[in-house]
Image (tube, rainbow, N blue to C red; front, side):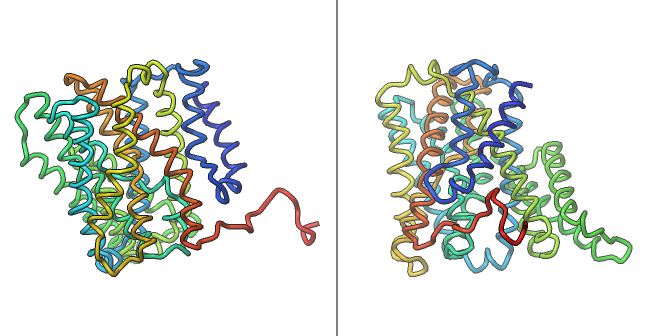
Length: 400
């Protein structure tokens, strides 16, 4: 119950300071990460959470699925069609370049052999826009930029998994099964499209009518069924989640609009819970053995590799301004996909699995600190002012 108490307390503090965070570099995500570090074994030792604890992988998995399902509803088929040139560059060029670019310092600075270096490159190649909320969550930010970051992060999580599995098998000297991996990807895409499509078509029948106050639970029910179906069939759940959200938004915009407030809140809650638990894993003992080369690797992966890969992929495109290209290049935060894949490596038992996880954990922590604290300044640079009309606890004159 100590963990529950800590989560409730930090959530209360974060909500109370969320107005300040929306206008400054203060980040609610960073608050949960720091709180987790304080209550974990590296801090006051109030909770004991190990890397092998099922709670860790389950929370990260649920958080990632929830975020992708919600983000998918912001990228219907029309949006994907209109934005395919930018998204195609990000996924087809920037993502492989990032994977290879991370592998190079992992080999030369962190001392990993090439198969393991490529593995960590695959683990850290996905991006997560939830730590750039002031950019992707603001409707006054250019739509093409928001769509680019949303679609990129929504699809690269699922696309990175096959590479993680292939390199993991290579490091473990086990045979790879490309057909099986491709089948899991295809099945995830099929489930993500077919399941919500069938439900939406059924909702169009007169016999099915939802009470207005319960309409938001319809998409939630789809998400729950889809999550369970993916894990029972070994389909790729992350590709399925984004595809399902996009399908729902395409076929039933009303249902998607009703679900959006609930979906955003569920995404925030699961994200915060996963960050609290992840923060508890970051202990001085886990970080103390890392040398200068390992720390340099983490910084280079965030500050140099991703921006360079994205700028190269977006070079000479007239679809984005220079400021928008720089913003897209900077906001490649590492998040729950990398946590899930890092835990997969840790639990695989391959040689050096602890080192790989530690490097992944440090890189994610640095990314959260840098990206979640720079979204507001970057938004201001785009001439998007943070909200200044947020409600307070002080009653208005006409309420008295």
